[in-house]
Amino acid sequence: MTETLSIRTAQHHDPVEAVRAALARITQTEDKIQAFAAVFADEALAVAQQQRENSATGSLAGIPVVVKDIYDVGGYRTGNGSLGAPEHLAAQDSEAVSRLRDAGAIIIGKTTTHEYAYGVSTPPTRNPWSPDRIPGGSSGGSGAAIAAGVVAAGLGTDTGGSIRIPAALCGVTGHKPTFGMVSRRGVSAISSTLDHTGPLGRTVDDTVALLEVIAGHDSADPYSSAAPVPDLRSEFGRGLAGITIGVAQDYFCDRLTPDVAAGFDAAVRTLESAGATIRQVAFTDVDLCPQVVDVLAGVEAAAWHAMQDGMQPDRFGADVQAALAAGAAFTGVEYLAALRARAAVIAGMDAMFASGVELLISPTIAMTAPHYGATEVELGGKTVPILAGINALTVPANVTGMPALTVPAGFGADGLPIGLQLMGRPGADATVLAAGRAFEQLAGWVEHTPEL
Image 1 (cartoon, rainbow, N blue to C red):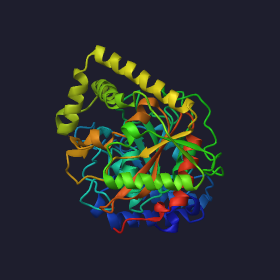
Image 2 (tube, helix red, strand yellow):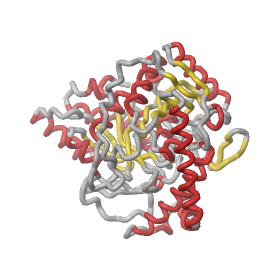
Image 3 (cartoon, helix red, strand yellow):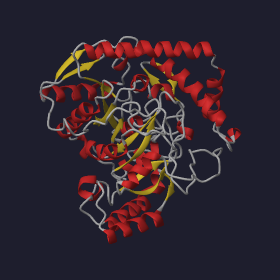
Image 4 (cartoon, rainbow, N blue to C red):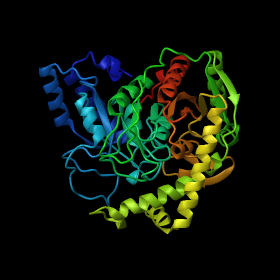
């Protein structure tokens, strides 16, 4: 990557040149990866010129960023990756986009999403490491654009792993904040109780730079947390010495491909060599998470879609039509059972952290990126639908609301990226981010970039 793609160094560069470089990189790479739903070239250059003339000083001044196409951006259509989305233009920015602009970030375009964020493939986008593989999803365009060197950071959303999955499969960083930390106002929904908004970045520093700006209470979002946002960099100087990290072999480590297992073992050794204590832990009832997500997301997505005007659901893809139909078919009894199961999972998480561990780690995904067009994958020797296989290890953080970060952790036998997932108790975003940053700097995998 070029120096200008680090947010820290880009702050010392001319905003017009930064935007021109991003647009040039889109020209170089877009035919290969197809990461963009729309590019705002003229507007981005105009904003950059205004910043140059006014010597803008916001924390993200002059920084080009991308936004997943389920966020409203005023004056543009929110396409949701769908032929059936309403045709109207967004009247105003979503809250997160508004906060980015207030900090000086320059929105250069909207990135692709799996249709209505309900999947992990994100067609037509390709993985920058190998165009015959998927980038992951549903925030696949943001992950691919960052990996391809277009921008240093951007926005995604995460209902069952949709920030962390593309970040891991594309070899970049992604953070799902504690539930409610970032406003969801102006963002298309899947699940009111599982959805999270958050950043992807080239590095942990780039990711935190966006999170610091977009985090914080929004009284117009009923799910927004009123808890004060912690200093997200407060533990950056802590290192890993003395931290106790849990590994839950059951569920998180018992269905991995051999190369992902080897990469995870190497990551554990890196953490231990830096002074961390690794402890085997039990996460009671975590195996309930896939069913909890299926029911809650299914019911809540069906309800949200039923309330929208101007949709053409007959034009949705077959996978999304099937998912919405399945959600609408769940009974109230099944929904309440899922809520009880969720409470059991949260109790299991609380007991695990009460045992003395500060973090839980796992591979982010049990395999490297599947082939483009795949509808099934192998998970622990069983053939399962691709969504269930790819999000198996990420859904617990959505069910519990705990913060979860993925950072690059090596490569599989096929040369494709592997991610390390770090999770903490709700509210412990600073601890998670600091440990991920320390690992990132020790392991050095973040320096590897695809040769597009």
